[in-house]
Amino acid sequence: MNPEYPSGCKVNLVLNILGKRADGFHELETLMLPVNLCDTLQFEPLGQGGVAMTCSDPTLPTDSRNLVVRAATSFFAAAMIPEGVRIHLEKRIPMAAGLGGGSGNAATTLLGLNNLFGSPLSQEKLHQLAAALGSDIPFFLQKRPALAKGRGEIIEPLDPFASLKGAALVLIHPGFGISTPWAYQQLARFPEALNGRAGRAAEAARLFATGDIASACKGLYNSLEAPALDKYPILALFQEFLRKRGAVGALMSGSGSTTFAITASVREGDDLAGAFREKFGETNWIEVVPC
Ligand code: C5P
Image (cartoon, rainbow, N blue to C red; front, side, top):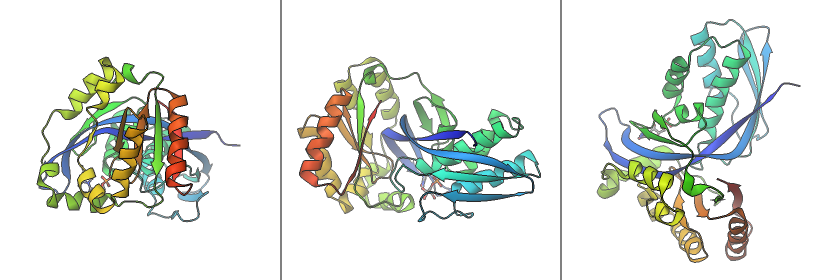
């Protein structure tokens, strides 16, 4: 049996867009928190070249449209290794959810293959490959909370946040996804959200590191809520309900569609998840995860 590599996800405590760049991407600053809700990946070396992928979720393509296959292909090209690999992905993290599950899978593939084949690539090279595959992927090469800048690929790792000790996240996926390119394109209709005030992410990082959880959560902010909550007002209702029922903070993660609530303890998170299910029914996907 090949070892299983856990592949986690994230929420954005702050996602502050600073403007559109000449290359079509958006300049941003974001405060990212790793979330210990994991898919798992297994790698088995193949005698010959090539990447053969299988996945527990039959709706996910397993050809070069999949970031895992693209990550593996770029690893073999950069490492100049003539071998190949069989990869199996067990999917638990919802997709098109703003949780970075696919980005995490790509980063875990780069790290896993580098480990399997005797570390032919440096950390710097892995970072370069990750950034070329997607803006969120370099974050997942490390395990700490981080401030990210540029288009998301410039990472400054931070110490675990003191204010979140013992706290929990309630993650709620509404059963529909939101396309990331769509959310960014729609920002053109919301000039205030498109041109955020720089500094929000670093301010929030200081609050989460030193302050109490309630004052830290006042810094939660996501520019992409402007288009997403305009199109899907149910997501605004979710947040209103979560705050009213005791969440210290609630926000959409990434480009959506996942909403997360922060509670002071796992027990409060479980209670809040129960109240949410009672109000909005069983069709939403809900997980309570310790911070
Ligand atoms: O980098 P990634 O492939 O994850 O980005 C997906 C899409 O999200 C990009 O094609 C772009 O439309 C949008 N995006 C952006 N600015 C960023 C990150 C992503 O406009 N900083």
